[in-house]
Length: 158
Length: 170
Image 1 (spheres, each protein chain N blue to C red):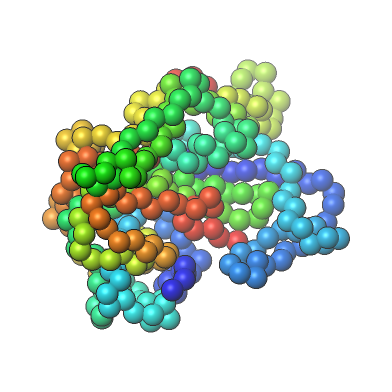
Image 2: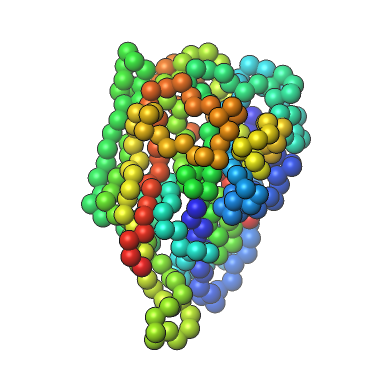
């Protein structure tokens, strides 16, 4: 497994971040979800998925451990930061580290998926567009689990 | 949401693009030795409106402090346990905290002596809430979220890796 951008979101992560920032459409947010180790499909299969509902429509599943819930990031409380970096000719989209507290043993964790959701007050995971996925192999044991975001943010665009 | 722009200075020397063979990341390099060589940093500005009350990632602030375009006032470090009940300190969270964060920016000159072009200005933010580990009942829930789709996790605590900042002077 490797880190990768979903084909549906290639070249669009900055646009999605700008949409969340502008609240246009209203209630646009990012979500962060974790995939279970058991049954996870190959990167090549997952890369072609167009919605998060598609991602988990086959053998791949979202984890169900007690203590886990999808993370949500909006323009007011999410701490999303976009940096247009003229010194390196790139744009970084950064979010704070994410911690799930006291996650009980159960599913093994395999990957973390960042999604764009155009309306967080309605819809389903079929409305969530997967943007990027990253290796995140953890065996929950009751500890807090923290996803440390890379220096360049979760998406570096050049 | 903070949107920053790192402004570059043209130092008159050439750069070319090269790609990291492992990650595919595009890099600006010096063609004479193939070493990464970004354009010199002229300054950092904020795109769009200056946020008056907003959240920003603790790690982002720490990097900006290391790069020299933010400083924190009365900086300290806090630790909280994150391990399982039988060994609480198996995992340790480390939080940077501060009373204020000062951003050293290049911003439009809105003084009565304005001569055009950006000028160096500091934005000073009070820290309203610190990064830390808190009881779940203190958590601020966004009104934008459907409770059915996004239930709260079953946990007595939550960890916040952001500073909530309030602008105090410009």
